[in-house]
Image 1 (cartoon, helix red, strand yellow):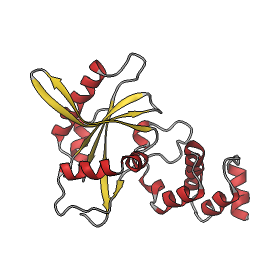
Image 2 (cartoon, helix red, strand yellow):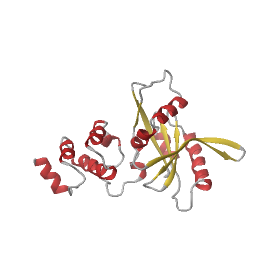
Image 3 (cartoon, rainbow, N blue to C red):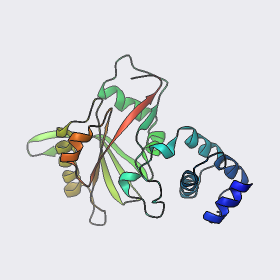
Image 4 (cartoon, helix red, strand yellow):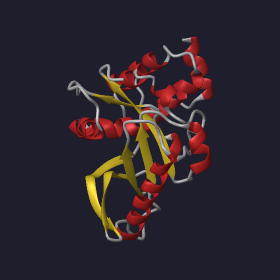
Length: 218
């Protein structure tokens, strides 16, 4: 009850939260973490079971923003790592196999990726000059009113991935997005980040995150 009193002093209580929500939240010790989950409950209208699952998955630890609850930026809304749950574990993980795991439960993948992501297409065929390419996943983000090109890599991040996804972003801006949409952003989902490389090839519209397969695949 003391924790509930302290929470009332620092946070306006929401009519979207039930006492059961608060029972779950008051098991946490970090007041900023509690505020984060209150924000998510209000934003996504989570029930108690959904809240419990998010706490169990340590979502707060995987999210980029902590205290920026009023106006979080897009890069801070993308979880790291993104947990991909699957019962069908391939003997050998390839990019194709990883694509299939994502497609098997696209709804949960989009929720896990972050807030406001919608599915548009898979292996979207485009033509740049005389060469055909395929965008791994084309998404749309309702929070930022923009298309999202998502590239999936099974290994460590490499500098050439940035050039590749930037081409896809530019193509989407020129041929797919409408005038009332904001500029396309790009997400590179890989097994391991390379901070040293990222420091020199970063772009404010390109974000990287890692994936983790729940089921024992390394």
